[in-house]
Length: 252
Image 1 (cartoon, helix red, strand yellow):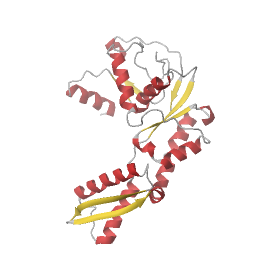
Image 2: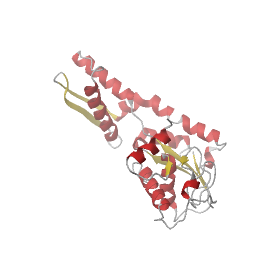
Image 3: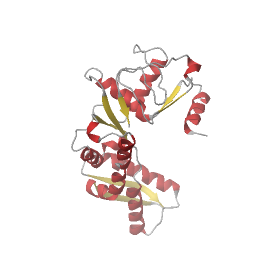
Image 4: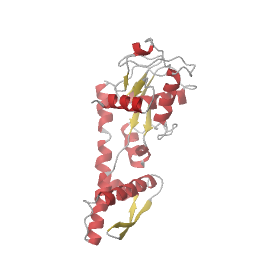
């Protein structure tokens, strides 16, 4: 079963009226459009950089550190690994704003307490290969769209992992030092955009947009040709006529 159909079915099981499915970049673009609506003039090309990653290198390195210190292998213990993963995720968030943090877990495995310190520099070193690979989809997206990176007006950060300073630096370097768009909350942008679209579809909005159709225009004044971004139910089932919009926003 394709993920979108599974999502629709889950909504029905939960007792929800599923009007449409939009993915994260599309929802984030709607949030961006509302944020910039008052100041934006004319067409814009916008790249939505959506990043939520599990940094396995950090986890594996710390797992090995525990094994080296205590001569115990926790790789076969799901509970210990889950607790370690949770602590590593917390450390990742902390290192976005501080230069050093600690990972401290009581009775991690067989009653053994675990404590270690990790610096941002070490964290970046462990995950640099992964960070660089995150830039590859950006290059491919622009290549597929036949666009030069100089034609992108804004790069919008979405997802908690975009707070990682090294990720921001690599993306900014890719765009030749261009300032990244941080005006919307990366953790809330997707939910906010989806809520706006839901309000409009239920008749609570006054903008008058209709659901998007793949490869077509929307009546959102800030959204035009959307690429790789949405999966809607048949609009005929909901009496939503397809209309064209005015502005243009590429979601890459």
